[in-house]
Image 1 (cartoon, rainbow, N blue to C red):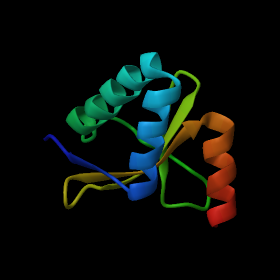
Image 2: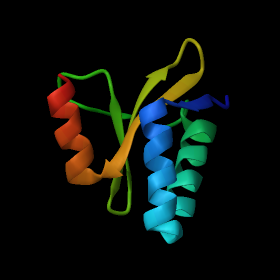
Image 3: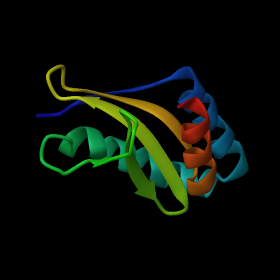
Length: 93
């Protein structure tokens, strides 16, 4: 089953910023998020501690997302360098 993938406004802004700073990385991140939507029902998701979000690693970047299996939906909440993405997650808790 293919899941729909949506981006929060924050994640959308981060993707645009990534495209400006590192256009060579944007394609890899976009392809990996697309792959996530196509394979979400068949893979094990790495859930973050004390958070509803899961983590997907793409090179030096972390993609934090929430998944709703009942709705078949993924919401990308944050996208940044690993350390920055996890630091922001800790601040949001």
